[in-house]
Length: 132
Image (cartoon, rainbow, N blue to C red; front, side, top):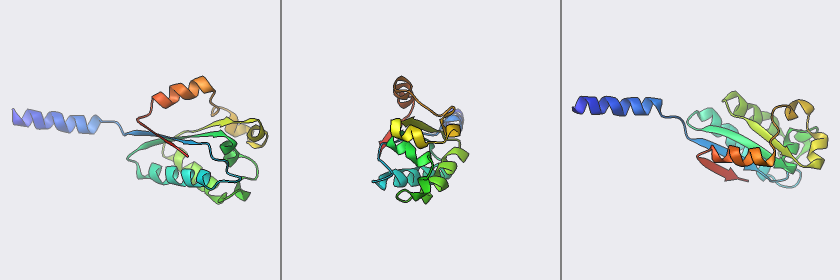
């Protein structure tokens, strides 16, 4: 009986999915270094492989994927850590405001834009949510 219990425990451990973390970034990268720090944290944790991470760049934070992003506060981090999230299987979603919409690359907008109802649905699918 004990062997069967151990086998069930091992199977449960092996099929257990990773905890899911959604990082929501509202900070304006033109004036607030928290946007870059949030992406640095998400990129670093995503390569660890123990947590499934996705990111939502809301409003002005979407400028992190726009023209001239490298010139923003800690702008080098955007080009470095966004790919790390994606390469680890995470998504980087956008909810740009009108100003950010003008500078975000159209390729980034295709397939990555969330509307408010979709954002609420997406958020409910994650175990943890962090907001910056």
